[in-house]
Image (tube, rainbow, N blue to C red; front, side):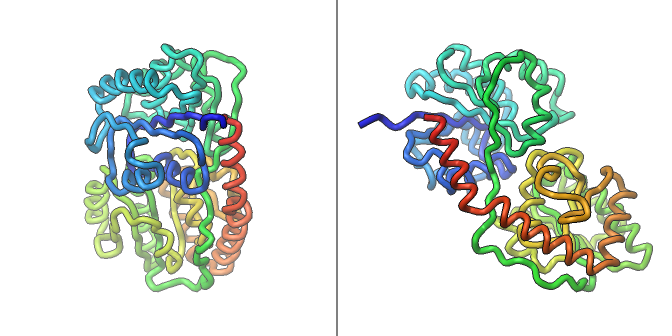
Length: 372
């Protein structure tokens, strides 16, 4: 009887981001089922997400460098040594590296293990402007010679991250689904507007998601006599500044911050529009979740949204991330119930077809088989 294949998944930590939550989706739908699969993380992060992964793979298969809640330079340095020791002791045939910091440390460590298959899992098409992007680009580019295979959560991410690979070589490229439509989803049925008109946002509360543009656009709509409110699902370092902006714009009573809510979309069918004017995206799971339940979506056409949505058919795309564009888009949807219904119904049908549980399980089983 042959031994089960060995694979190691390396990520920064268990934060509530799309890449990290996507790992749970992978595991829940059969990824590496039957394999000797281990996970290495530089920090623990969100306790609940860590608990979900622990339940799926077992505590003995998770290797943590730090029990903290954030990534630090010291943790990365310590993590390099810990990863090298694990690679030597565990002896995986393939290592999957998720997110930029994990890719840099992981590729460097794998230079000592030239026969181990190195897989870079790409999630974002741009580097964070506040985290020395020139240094990240240089390190990722230099170490790209070590990458044997590239995964991405959508075709746009796969295409646009090619710029991070300075050393051109023949590499296998794959689309790996990080999203699956829930078989128990409740799809929105009524598109009559509420009073006030209910906007909703979801995901990490960070600057690049541009919650601020929505607040500015809300002020424009209120000045036009439109009664609107906003509910924000998610947490992040930008929350306090957004609360201050809402107060400054006189929107305190119109904006509610719900914090992190697991499966937020289960509570969202009674909203009128999902809005997401992000500066850049990977797959954008929250937009896919909004479309899954039939919410009309107003979003910047970035990342996966280019692949799984079509402007005017199942979503309304913003030409740019600007206050004017968001205001105009919201006004259009505010005034047109028929448009909201057409977009929402088409979105739900599209997502149910494209990301059915059967198709995702089949794709992940095929990827697992090819890793062997």
